[in-house]
Length: 574
Image (cartoon, rainbow, N blue to C red; front, side):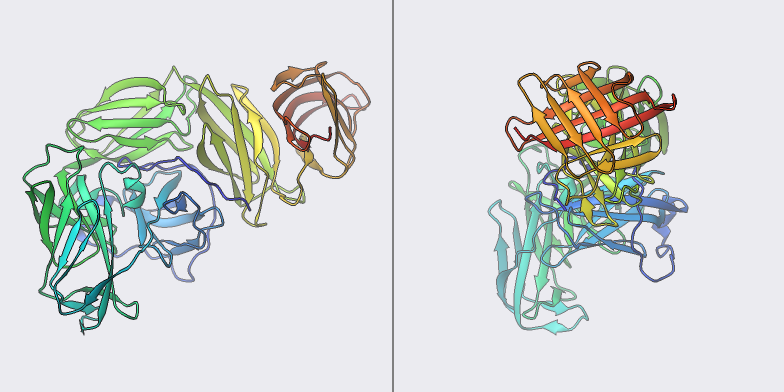
């Protein structure tokens, strides 16, 4: 199975979910809801929701075999770093995902779930331990950016017993200006303050500290002892307040809890902490949930639209619409927000102002008339021509990767496109068969781009695949290509003969007689058709791929009109 090197679906402070339908492995336990606490009364009733996500390392390489949990449901990431948990029991307004892999600090993501499948994008940070010295003596750790942790030497193990051996420590600092801060940080910027109120946070920097004993056991500060932390103030926040609240991340509950004060000393915040996990210097604001649906002028939901919300005096919140066009997340209450919507090429589509909102609000549909959109549809097949029941496809458009699931082999989504870029690729994955397709080249043909069949059979390196009405077939033996200066011919002989004559080498959209499907299955030779051919790629050299799709109708030998869609992935022979 191929690995995906990039994915641009970003989850920032405005949380996002993407519609995908998957199943997952589950623990052999009852689906009991999370333990109730008074603060959880803010989150509504228990509901079942679907989740999908991708976990990568700091080089954007996928991490496989990461253990991912949501409540009592557990699964692991595949070779592409993808995980799927379906029908998890979560709250209406709060879901918590945890992820663990040896050699990396524990990961997590919290979100406001929508009724579609919810997407989590996580970037893991390596747990790089360094020797701190022996317990019982003062010590400190200094990072090149100015982060400093000072210890008084008193440590204890997980059972509360005093520890006296060698100590190792891993320290990770996250700056507010880090473009991946919301992929790396735990949970989301959602908190419980000292008065037990919900708050949304504006971070001024956070740090994670992991302590280990000589045998790798987890350590922490001894009861009654503190450590001093110094967190540098980012240059992008010159108006940082003189004092600021400290917050620690509760790894069991999935949100931040107010726990002390830090003071501005020079260009750092300095404070004392009584234990270690993640610590955060944050300003706090009352919060409400805001939801919206992004649609085109025909009322169709649009996937992958970038929405930027900027509250007054705060950093922007960025989100991407899911397959239902939905975006839900936390925003400061009683604050107006500038809303900007962008296409995949970064061009501004529309601007407006929303809010202020004093309570949880769904503002309904937001139509973007200036957007160019295209529906992409197709069928994902396994090597036996059967629809893939547990799998997904990855769209790569303008170096942005997005994930979509299949339902009984079918996938359909409506996405924004750029006027200047018409090409994209798709790769399909069959999770049951542990196989993937090749990376296939296509061209948008708005308003609908039907790619036909995508075959997850990576032992086949070239094929013609097609579907007549509801009957799919794959031609994967004796596929051939003959070319000349003005065109080429593609043919295959298994399971049925198929012969395609093409009179142009330039990628584009064509109809007969420039391109023609001359003979296959139950057709007689040269019967007129109503077919459209989209040549996405004609390889520059021998051995490079020709990629093409076709769709339309034809009349069979019994004078019956039939629908056909197909895909071509064939190497140049000459």
